[in-house]
Length: 271
Image (cartoon, rainbow, N blue to C red; front, top):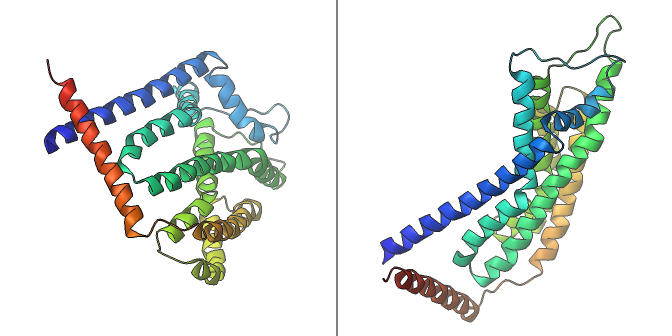
């Protein structure tokens, strides 16, 4: 019976993965025609091309780079746009194995973490890139014509997107740590000065070697840390089901769901 349950979970996992991949593939196919990989890359390069000298364009040093780089970018954009479907499949697979109070906690965290990650990407694209490229262009000697490579630019952009996307996850990380009992809200407040030092080091390592980009990451990190402390304090006031009766009810409900799933698999296997 345990083996049958394990196989049924593997089959369900395969189906969920296939559905997520189909969603990504459909979005990718649509983006290849409307607006097209080249247009998507032009949108991504817009913060940089605005600061280049008049008549200057980016270059491609590889033979197939003008084709592969926009395709890679389109695949990444397809994954981001398909996140609601992907997260829904993940949630549908994981939710049956969770207790009722765990479902109430995880679903808001998944939604909020997704929104914060996208907000970090938007902040990086619409604000940080313009400030950084403008600052760098002012230091370029007049005798040099900047001609950035499209592949190196994509690598730089992805690194910055990942850094700011993860930075905006700080509130969610703090809430999870407090709810798991790893730290307390008081300890987070005491650690505030150390966090500023750690955030400064991370900002200096991840961002380009200029003050503007470092501050663009450091200041949001410090603000989000304070937001995380406030949110963790609000969440800690919500009492978790600690009584034996409530935990037992969740366990009985979970066992009943698993038993129903096993009976369903056995009945479906009958001729």
